[in-house]
Amino acid sequence: MPDSVEVLRTAFVDLWATIMLFLPKFAFATAVIIVGIVASNLLKKAVVRLVHMFKIDDLLERLEVKEIFHKAGVKLDIGEVLGFLVKWFVIVMFLIVAADAMQWTQITVFLGQVITYIPNVLIAIVILLVGLLLGNFVQDVIRSAMEVAQMKSANFLSGIGKWAIIVFSGMASLVQLGIAEALIQTLFTGFIAMLALAGGLAFGLGGKEHASKALDHLYQDLREKHKENE
Image (cartoon, rainbow, N blue to C red; front, top):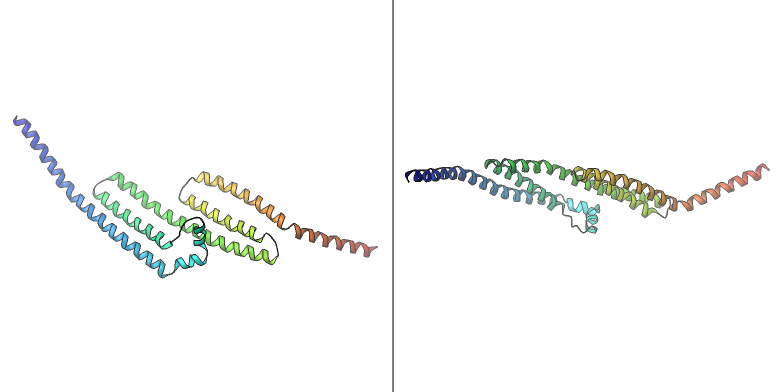
């Protein structure tokens, strides 16, 4: 009987020692998480205010970037997007500190991988936005040039140029994120082939009338020269 009491007493002592070692770590980790949540919300609000202060949303609206997302059924608020990314970046950073304090190695490693992946998300967003801006610019340039040349397929070809750049930037963004890189490369090759075929057909149909007029002029010039030689 005394041996059983001693075993039980030892077990309770070990349990109490474990709890006493756990509680300070748990309290510190909880405090870190709370501070992280508060800091992340404050930083998110600061980012949103900065974006609105510099009127980046207005710039994207003038460049018709927001209109593209609107057509896709997505309401773009760049301030909220950047604020969301900053918020969760800070939260994950504080979670890493908390997990490390609790000596949860696997969680620490996983969150570290999340942190290293966030810059890829930011770069992918930048690539997509640049693609949208460049696509609109190229569309305006092609349309203006073809309207000056009085080609009927100006809107069609300018649209092809615009969406070719947008699709390319979208694929580049997915590659940056490491999503199905082999599949994206295959789709990109097929897209380029389809674009070349569509562009050739459009150019042929749009330039048929101009080519016919040029051949008529050439035929008339040759006839006149032939008559002069006779």
